[in-house]
Image (cartoon, rainbow, N blue to C red; front, side, top):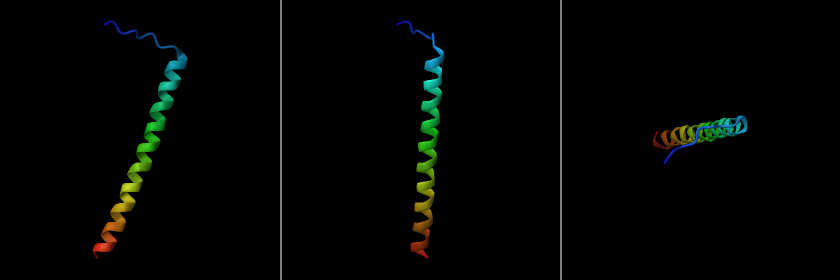
Length: 45
């Protein structure tokens, strides 16, 4: 199978936006986990 790597500018912009969205989602998930960790440690004390 031969892959076609002829990205148009629009393709590239869409890809970049997708990656940015993923980063935002990941960062939000991470901060949720950190909040949970803080709550967990509060309960143990």
